[in-house]
Amino acid sequence: MSGSLGKEKVVGEKQILGKSKWLQLVDVKYVRDGQEKTWQYCERCTRPANCDVDAVTVFAIVREPSKPSRVVVVKQFRPPLNTYTVELCAGLVDPGETVEAAALRELKEETGYTGKVLFTGGKQYLSPGLTNECVKTVFCEVDASKQTRQDKEDEGAITVELLPLDGLLETLNKLEGEGYAVWVGLYSIAQTLKLQSILA
Amino acid sequence: MSGSLGKEKVVGEKQILGKSKWLQLVDVKYVRDGQEKTWQYCERCTRPANCDVDAVTVFAIVREPSKPSRVVVVKQFRPPLNTYTVELCAGLVDPGETVEAAALRELKEETGYTGKVLFTGGKQYLSPGLTNECVKTVFCEVDASKQTRQDKEDEGAITVELLPLDGLLETLNKLEGEGYAVWVGLYSIAQTLKLQSILA
Image (tube, rainbow over all chains, first blue to last red; front, top):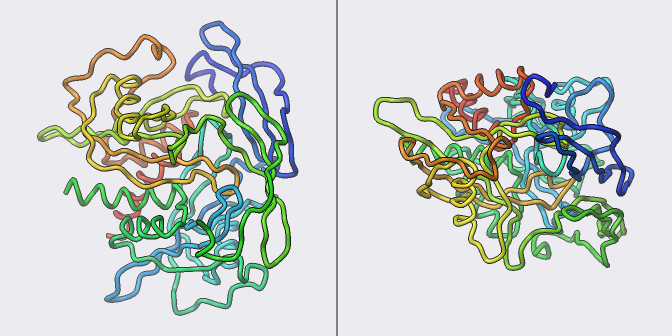
């Protein structure tokens, strides 16, 4: 794929520097300006065949007449950060599953909401220097009056909240002040809304 | 920090499963519902002491009278993806450096633009299940008529472009179709603008 965009490319076999069930640390060689160089990164071992992303994230919006629009977020403990996060609902894509099906399944499992797809975003690379991990965001609308009970399996591990889109950045900053860690995709949405209010 | 938010927490020493100069794959134990479990993740070895993020990204906007606003993006080869990316200008924070100083330095080095800070976003966790990596985005304004030559060191490795904010999602989708990989922070901005146009 890179052939038409420039001369750099990965060459040879990758070496595995460390491995667990879910992740591996690898070393690859690549060519820049005719010179061979090396790069280390982390990759998931779980991406299904015939799937071009590792995971989906779900932007689910609640719109009700004469009420401010709200976005569905999940809070959960994340061992890499040793704290609780505020994220969009998310999950790995199962083999044979479309990203939209994975999104609606994860939304139902994690939050109890049934989503109606608005549109699906493109492939988003989370940290192109550190990992090949790649996700898509599925934008959905949900009816807040029809939330079913959350599945038993997530009880206690994941909590669900609705945050108003108005003042979302201030809300996230407040949560950060309380010790929560915020996922980049959610923060970017809030910061874009803030930027627009500054530039307007 | 997590004590006030819930009962889950990391316990004991982390184990190193694999290590390179820049990254390491680690295993930690944590407690959930009184049970000890394990989690593996990847961390950078380069975060400076007294710094709460690994890196900065720079959203730099060009506004000129009677012209559409444009955002400064960089294209570069990323070995983990074996292709070229479209990203916001970004870089690691040096020891003793503020995130704003790092942002203005990276912007100058990578793009030749001198930025004026509008505001700094909060801590954004890139992939809370896979890594503790954390960045802040510094939002800047630049004067497009005053671009100096890019530094020699980046010549050939990084190219700079200005993409119109109007129709940004369509532009990124077109670049994706050509084989480029798009960073989540940039895609999120574009998708938020698109979402607003759908909901308006």
